[in-house]
Length: 384
Image (tube, rainbow, N blue to C red):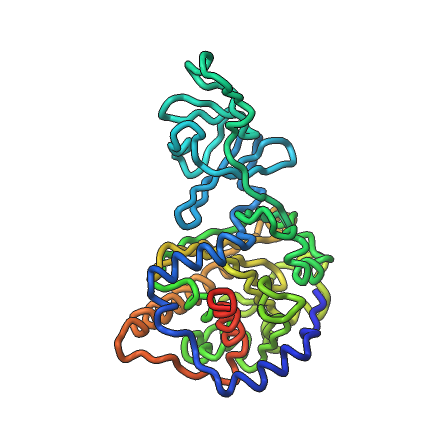
């Protein structure tokens, strides 16, 4: 992965001039239910959202349900190579057609009145409709939504006019061009419930100013002053898509593990430079893409309401590495479980604090340029 600084000098100059004078997000953006609902309309309903991994669909007919705000979405493997997405809403009287979070079906039958749909979402059976006038089953398929894949990840978008996901994520697609992300396999998974607004969690991921205090284990392996940001949400090349950069590993470290050492070989396609870095990219608005020399860590952020979020963490490794008798992912999983819990704790402390009448927007430090950029982009989208 060869990553260079952002080409937007104008954006860099704007941040350089504005950050020392700027203050953080207003209180209402961190705990107001009305703002949260509006964010779903303006941000989540118009963004590419990573919903699953192709591995989640081992057979034709395999499905998972995902909830985005008030919307329930079915993702289903409809053929050997295709994943389809549709609203989990029957075209008869609106019942949810699937209830289980995951499973396998040969067709989709609504539990209310047995309207039945094919794996492609087409209505194939609607009891007692033979006498209806001008009733065309083809016009009553389950409503689809955009569904595309990149690197083995499955993305959905509620906006039919959105540009293709690979074009939207072009910066990251280009940087990972030599790595077969689609061949990596899941080696671990953890879920967390966090009592914090989704933006507080994104801001926390976007800086390491807090690392010496909150993450002594992480700071020992990647010293907080070695971070370098190369992508910003307000820059033309990565606008509204990617934010982040990398941190350098200490001389004694090979990866982010309990010991800082690993016996796992680097991910195929990584450069010598890659083996000395950990890349951290926020795939806006709800995916944290953390590429280590020997594994990929993904955080899937799923906002629940204005003050609560769900986070699913998954670790991915080379399949050849996973077949070795001594393969053990726990050194990567356990240290990140600790780091995650440290982060969630301070995010929850922040959530409690910003609800206070004493809270006023604070000032950014020179180590929070990506936080400032994130907040500026939020305000651009929400208030122009």
